[in-house]
Image (cartoon, rainbow, N blue to C red):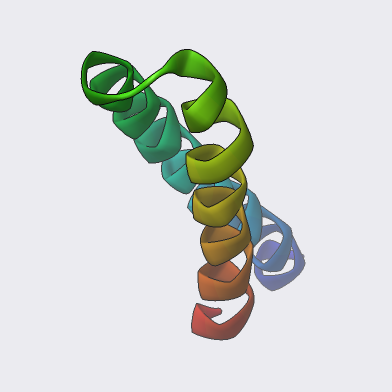
Amino acid sequence: MYNSILNVLLPVLCFLSCFFFVLFCFVLFICFCSVSYCIHEVVPVLLTRCQLYCHYSI
């Protein structure tokens, strides 16, 4: 029971922590580039890396 909860929570927590990291980066990037560039270029790449990282690290 505990293991199955952990198996569900770990990827979710991993992705959430990564997602908040992306948001943090997004806020930083607004200072350095246009908002549209951030949304279309930076965020998708970071999100994809989060998904890959979380998928392979767990």
